[in-house]
Length: 94
Image (cartoon, rainbow, N blue to C red; front, top):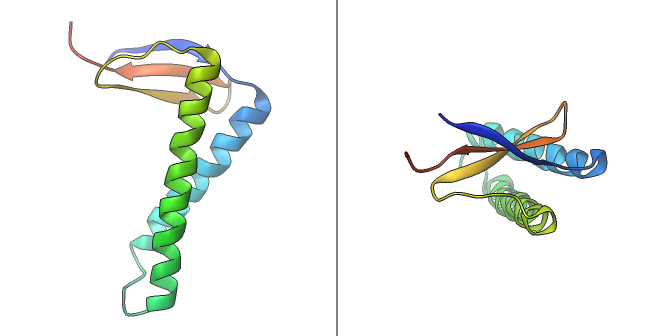
């Protein structure tokens, strides 16, 4: 898999996406054990997952516009939380 650095974000920007990343992962873990039988909790979980996913994607879209990151069909960006570096991963085979 091809992976190359395409940019960097500020410490504050990194903290924002890290919070969303951790929340999304926590909600996904919770989704494995919550059943529709607990309707109130299930509905809140579904709503929170949707809102967090939307915020997560909006962060990537906003940062990509702000920093003009290189992109590629079939590729996606990743962040190194230790260095704030952004990598383009994958994409079409050359």
